[in-house]
Image (cartoon, rainbow, N blue to C red; front, side, top):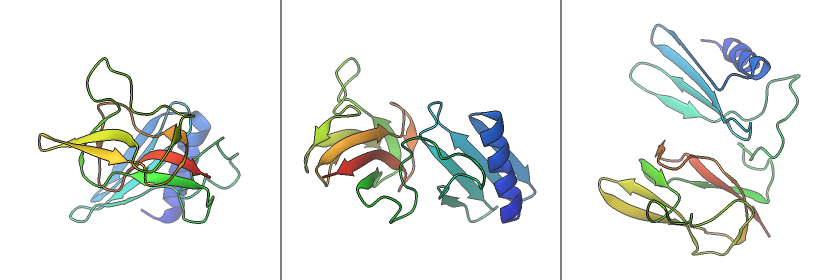
Length: 158
């Protein structure tokens, strides 16, 4: 698939408001997934033996930018930092079912504050804030599988 074809698919997803679109042509596969609130847009492009994953850098040309979208490229907003998963596993926002989440959107955090747990191979790994700031958005749902390097939170640093 060409870049222009992928851009057309992004435009289609944006214009129609669908949450997820997946197209496969031979060994090439493209999946575009957007959150319901429109805060997160993800583009996944894979080939047969060597999958490649990249978050979209910007909305398609001519489309209005979504409100409060975390930056996908370094330098887009130097005060908004993405907390990424250091491992593959399952995201949990609280220490146990029925307990309050470690952090909420709008909450101020300091370095060392536990943000979530990633369960990997029956081990619970606490993910901590590395900067002080305000949690601007949570980018994954509780119980959702996450990939290495996937953005979990956006924190606006002081």
